[in-house]
Image (spheres, rainbow, N blue to C red):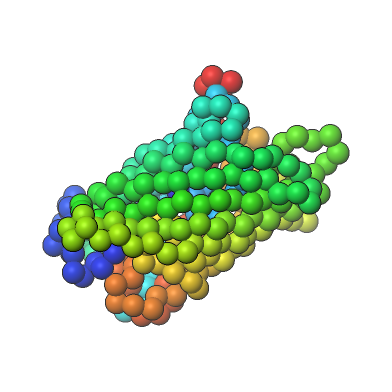
Length: 293
């Protein structure tokens, strides 16, 4: 699950820089592609490229690793490359903790760290069919990418309908159509003037099997800005494909669009943007390990 402080221009000088030298963008992209290709076939990276969360968690005792890399294009600005890693584990059959979020953005020959995340998630009710499954989550983002006094957070509820599940199946991923609704708030606390702001967050998404294979799904979603980024707001959308390579391995290919409407808004990738649509292409992988199961 990318966060950043907002108002980039006002706080540019406060951001930590890993390096600042002439490193062509194409070399960074090549490095990311080589990194992804270096994994064994049975290991995969992330679900995070799709923003909307669902009312399900990994099985108890499983460790999940999610990672992704993407390229954001903004009009009148240089492209931004982002890579991130997330880790999570279900402590019980209803409670999951996601933590970490080690990552970096690269733009204009500068690399900056991404904010770190901790998010507990609890499944309140499990269901198949017309009655939705319900879960709740809350997260805090530790500011590494910008103003150290500015903390982002969110809290939300997830409702998911898992439809057209094969008879006798109890696997929440084994369905023909899934619909997800997220409602909550995202907030920002600025320790400098002791100012706290909060606003409504919502998202809606679907996941449906394709004629190609039951393992290949088509996904689409609209959301009120990334919950990792307080300033980001509607309209924002994502669409793409998810491949369930195995029960423990998934791969995503995502196209994202976010409409910028202020000088202080930037994408969750951390790069600056112009007053127009900003587009991102991401690849993500996710793998599950049976640690205590």
